Image (cartoon, rainbow, N blue to C red):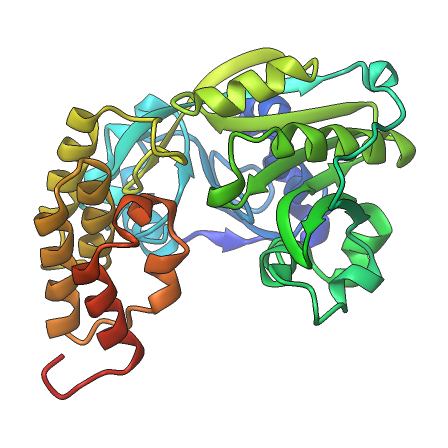
Length: 356
């Protein structure tokens, strides 16, 4: 069996040409290749590679010649079962040989870009009770701030907090001591950056996402960034509307492969699509118990309470390490959070009994 060589960080660029236009569409990939973001690069030959695999904080990327069958086993060992994989359809034809994930599915994603940050105005008056804060050392160390853990998780995708403070940027909106919306840089390379956004479920559809992204675009401009990229699921119509409203322009669509539900909001998929995904997840749960949790979320979105609870019960019987916050803070279960049956189940997770 041929092996894959893990490149030293100073040698990452040797693999860049294999990825073609992907390095233009995915700054997170190019940042790893330029050693400006954490990640690993593996190739079949350290000087003249024909196959390259890159792991980054945003996902995994695979390029090169899929007909190299002698490399398939090495790729299977390198590619995580739960990978979020971005590659070509030619590689998808050999997934059975190179990927231990039994149920990968393609789904469409979009890349939008903002190349006119000078058009973003200076700030706006915030409604009373809402505070805009930079993601700086003071915020990261503010233990009294509710929701700070979500910001810390984001910053941990960088090599270090110090690197984020030196090269990254971010803004959060705080109400009553709780972070309700946030936008941070995923990566920065020269004068390019990619950013993301998040808003607590109970505060969505209130304009907070637009306010915090607008503020973060101003922060990017202040950092000398000229181009900001924005990735989202094609199913996420709210994210697309937000990008358009702030002056982003669509630059293309690509496929990602995973066993994850391709949605981030309740309305992203139809009930039929959620049912189909729920059954898809269930089909793999015996060999991959985490899929039962994903099935529960999909059944909840489909309005199938009993099937959602049945999958959570299935996990409890197998003593899978389910955590209360994975249900209580999960938008997929929002319609069931006040349901007494779900509350009782989560209470059992919080204080396990011999029967669970």
